[in-house]
Length: 74
Image (cartoon, rainbow, N blue to C red; front, side):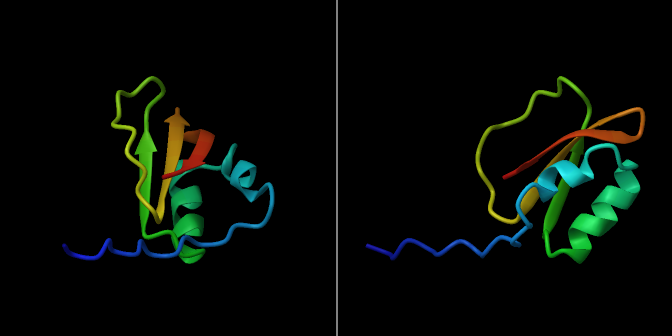
C-alpha cells in the first residue's frame, strides 16, 4: 500500500488576520494573499455552489461588487 502523502504546509496567518481581507478590493486581497504564501486564491460570488473538499494552501474569498465580504481557508 502506498504511503499517504503529506499535504503542503499552509501559510501561517496571524491571529484574526483572515478578517483583515474582508473589505479589501478583490484584486488587492488576492495579491496580498499570494505574497503571504497562499498557492491558490479562489474568488467566488455570493451563494456560489462549490465543492466542500479541503485543499491545503487555498484561500477562498466571497466577493460582492469587487469587494471581499468573507474569507476562509481550504
